[in-house]
Structures are given as structure tokens and as C-alpha cells.
Amino acid sequence: AKEAEEVLGGGGAGPEGRADAMRMRAQSELIPVTAAVEPTPKAPVLSKPLNPAISNVASPRGRERLSMPVTASMVMKQTLNAEEKKLTTKVEKMRRKKRSATSSNLANMSAPETTICHPDLLRDIDKLQLQEFAKEHFQSQKKGMLRRSQPLTQMLSWVKEPLAGSLLKLPSEKLSKEASRISKLMMNYMEGKTKKMSADEIAVDIVSKGIKNIELRDEIYCQLAKQTCFNPSRESAFRGWELFLFAVMGFPPSKQLEPHLVNYWKEHQKLPSKENNFATYCLKQLPKISALGARGRLPTVTEIQKYRDSPFRVTNFGVTIDEILEREREKEPERTVPKLLEVLSDAIFRLNGHLTEGIFRVPGDTEEVNKLRLQIDEGNFDTSYIEDPNVPGSLLKLWLRELEEPLIPASLYDNCIKNSGDASAAAVVADLPAENRATAEFVVGMLQRVGEHHEKNKMSLSNLAMVFAPNFLRCPDPNPQVIFENTKFEKEWLFSLLSHLKVHDA
Image 1 (cartoon, rainbow, N blue to C red):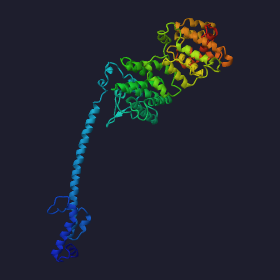
Image 2: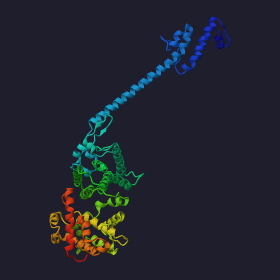
Image 3: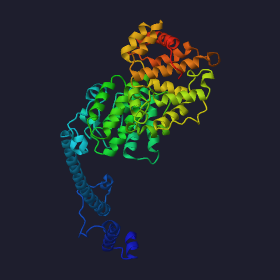
Image 4: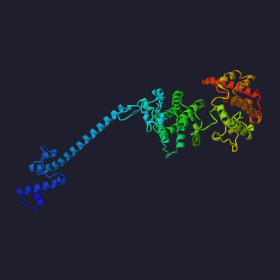
């Protein structure tokens, strides 16, 4: 009665008034809930109450009052659940359809078609020369939602995205992550993305990683072979070959990878494009870096800039004496020895190198030596700015050591070793080709002049023979033990040559 009076504003307290009051109160409680749904004449009553506590209500009228708002809320909740279920079912069907399409694509996946490549790559050549190496040394590469293993042809072909890990089976996770970083650097260089680092700085970083870590060298070469194989962008492929060039001038591949890499480069020699020049130059540099080992010093940006054009310009280093003289005789027909030898020899004596203690034994500043080398390769033979005689002295030894064919040909090596201890050593010079004989006599005459001042420079003929023997003779046997045992015979032969060969003043 009191509740009815409150609702009706003090209306009657009889049975009819109480019933009307209860109905009005129930309707007032339903207003917030039923405002968002269609009005119904009367909300249905659940056969079973949602809340067990409702069953404990003694009064049927009270039970009706308590159940009505819960029932309306439940109607809305059931409607929302039904809509959500329909949406979920629809999304799941779309996902199943997408997975089915992906599986079909993976099943039909094959090696990249050569039709995506530029015309020069449409020739009938076999670029996948690393397959046998990859079978043994590559780790399994998985891709896609189903994580299926990639075939070797895909593992050895160009990809658009950086590698998530290493190609090779590296011994640690740390090296695998470093291989992934190298892949990103290669991508940035080849695609011209140089916001954070310049292209030259990226090249220095990649080569430095190979010089410092022997376990990453083959990884770098394999990644470069992958990114230059079936690369659809000619410009990107050329930049990849530039990285090949920088790598082969910094560190060698392993003996296991080397023959496969040689075959890969030889295949690219068949192409009538810049790739031919790069491949030819890499093949020429590979034996030298394999014999000498990795550089002891990291490259500089200046060196990278100079090396980039190496396959397309003439050079005085790493070629034969015949090749140098053939080029120089076009302007100077009477020339008998390379101009470089005369320029360096004059610089040594002009700077009193013959009176400098340890000349040819003490190395010159590495930066200055490389600067002079690059300058001479550009055709500039000016040495007036040099102040240290060890700089031209070191470059002269480097030139002899890097000759494509040694000053004393391999065919005469055994003869030199057998006659290392007697005066007949000088007779070998008479058997040399004309260009080699003139060059050998020039160098011997220069060393004899230096040896005359051994009291001041501490470089006797014996000391000079020890320093220059590896630059005159090159053991053809790759066995390290044979090379070591022949060292003393090589020194004895050159000492005999310096002692007995009579030449004109250099």
C-alpha cells in the first residue's frame, strides 16, 4: 500500500490500487531496458528463472515483478549474441577460403621464371652454379603459413625482402642475426636506399664484416650470388656486382665455395653487358686474394670509390708485364720496362731511401701507399709530394707481388731452387722472356745500388734477398710445408743473383 501510494502520489490503498501501482512500477523499471527494442504488448515470462534467487520469492506477483526486467535484458542479449555468431561464422569462412588459396599457391610454387629478367639474362646460361654447395651447406628455408621448405632454385634466386636469417648453417644464433643485418645492408645498397648511410659507407661496412669474421665470408658471397641471380632490375644487379668486386678485394671465399663461385662468375662472362666486366675482374682478383688472404686493414670510403670503376679502367697492378708495356709502347715505342718502376725507383733515391735504415724492410704508411697506387692507376705519376721513401719502396714490392704472372715464370721455378747456391743462378735470367728479363735486370741493379750503402741503411744483399725473394719467385705448389721448406732456397737463389749478375745502373 505504501509503495502504491508513493507511485500514485497517495492513491487508494485497496487491492485494485495496489495492483495498479505494481504494474506502473514494473513498467517504469522496464523503460530504460525496452526503450531500444520494439514495444510488445507483454514481455514473455521465462519458464525457468535466470537467477535461482527468483524461485525463492514467495509472492507470484513479486516473482512477476522481478522477472520482467531480466527477461527484457535477455531478449536484447540473445539478439546481440545471434548477430555476433553470424559475423564470426562469416569471418571464419573467409579465413578458410584464404588458407585454401595460399596452400594451392605454395603447392604450385616453382623456380622464378627468366622472363622477369632483363633481356641479357634471357640467354641460355646456367646461373645456378651453387646448387651442389647449397645442398650440403645451406640450411632449410621455410616460408608461408604452412612453413613449407623452399626448393634450392628459390633459395639461390633473387628475393625482394631481406633474409630473416642466414643462408648457411652458421654455428650460432648471433652469427645468423648478423647475416640478416648484412642482407638488409645489401638490399639498401642495391636498391639505392641511402638515408642513414651513404652507399660507400654501406659497402665499407659489409666488407669490414667479412674481413673481421671468417665465418661470415661465405655467407656474404652466397647472398651476393643469390641477389644477382635472376634479378629483375638491371641497376640493382649491377650494384650487386659492385659488392662482389669489393668483397673479392677484401677477403677470399672458402676452398669449398671457391670452385662453385668461379663457375658462377664464368657463366656471367657469357653476357654482353657490364656483368661480363665485373665477372672477368673478379676471376682475375680471386687467385690473388686467395693466395694472400684477407686484408689486414679495413677499407676506406676513398678506396671503395676508386675500386668501383676498376673493371672499366686500365691498371698497372695485378696484370702481366706484357700487358703494361703493350699499352705504354703506344706512346713510347722504345720503352723496355714499365714506367711505374722508373718513377718509384727515382722517388726512392730522390728521398735518400738508399741511406734510410730499413729501406724495403720497414713498411710505408698504408694510407699513403694506397693513395699513390690509385693515383698511378689514374695515369698520374707525380711523386713530388711524398716525403717518406718507404712509401714508394712498399708500393714497388706490392707491384712485384701482385703481378698476374711472377717475374720468374713458374716453368723456371724448379731450376732456380736446384741452382740456388752457385753462380749459375744468373744464367736463369738469360732464359726469361725479353720483357721479364729487362724488368728483372732493372730491379736487381736498383737493389745492388741500395746494398752498396748497407752500413747506413742496414740492408745488405743478404737482407735484401730475404725481403725480395717472395716477390721474384712464387712457389707453384700450394702445399704450405713445401712453400715453407723452399723459402731458404728462394733467398739463396736471389742472393746469388744479386751477387753475380752484372747489370747497368738502374
